[in-house]
Structure formats: structure tokens, C-alpha cells
Length: 243
Image (cartoon, rainbow, N blue to C red; front, side, top):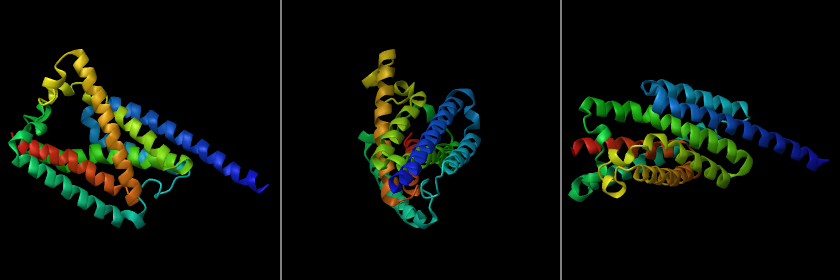
């Protein structure tokens, strides 16, 4: 009798988790196309609206703020992790800026003509809201949290990180030519472009594992948010200063 009673909630939890994960993946597939093909100029509005929508999906499936990595009790610890991680990335960027051999790593044709104001907008608004908020809430918040409740941290990390890698297919279609440091490696052929995309999926999938682990260890979404912002935003800034 007791075992039957405990199995029923687990079953409901699994169903809710499956529904929440399925809805989240479907929404993200549409958002990926919107941001990269259909309406990229609405990226900030899309990020805020979709983040709120996905949190609603998690809560509707029985999730909590803690499942989303936004438990108020863990925010202080997450903020401390974030400050340390931002400092580490800043130090790496500073060393890279001081070493001429590393300057090519920061070069990117997509941003070579940005003005100082445009770079500041990306660093302070586009990256934290349009990229970090959406991706962390979606992948390390809703997806990780919902799967972790039913299947544990290992399964949650695998699901979240795999989908995070696939999320980067569209943005990386021209990466081999956009990043001058990669052009000698992959060339400008269709095969080279495909290999660059495959490499990006693997690399961002591995990065997703690291971000999930930061979320697990800190108990807060602020830790992966801090690292994610630092890598993207300080990369833009360093590349701009080295032009």
C-alpha cells in the first residue's frame, strides 16, 4: 500500500517532467529560428518574454524557485561564485591582451566594425539580457531543474548540455570565416563550415556541462550566469580594444 502510494507521485513527477521538458524544447526551437533567422532585432524582448514563459512552464509542472536555481537562500552564494568567476575570466583576457600571439583569438569579423557605444551596449545589455538570461534560465534553470527533480543531476546535465550544444548550430554556420583564426583550419568550403559547426556543438556542449556543474555546486543560477557573461562580454570588449 505504501509503495503504491509513493509510486504514484513519482509517476506524476515523471509525466510532468516530460511535458515541461518537451514544451521547453519546442519553445526553444522556435526561439532559435526567431533570433537567428526571422526576427533577430527583437532578441531582447524575446529573451525576457521566453524566460518568463519557461519559468511558468516549470512552475506549472510542480517546480520551485530552487529547481530553477533561483532560491533566494542560495543567491548570496551564487553571487560570490559569480564574482570569482568573472575575476578569473578578466585575468585571462588581460593576459591574452598582453600576449601578441593570443590576439588572433579575440578577432571576429562580425564585430570588427562596431563602435565603442555598440560594444558597450552588447556588454551591458545584449549579452546579459539577450544571451545570458535566456540561455541560463532555459538550459541551467528550467531544463536542468525539471529533469533533475525526476531523474537526478547526471541525467539533467546530459539533457541540458546536449541541447545547449545543438542550440548553437544556427549561430555557428559561418563561424569558419567569421573567426580569422579558424579560417586556416577549416577553410571556406562547405565541408569546412560543417566541421566548424560540429566543433562548436561539441565545444558548447562541454561548456554546458561545466555550467551545469557550477549551478549544481553553487545551488544558484547566478554562478553560471556570471561565467557566461564574463566569457561573452569580456571577449567582445577585449577584441574591440585590440583592433
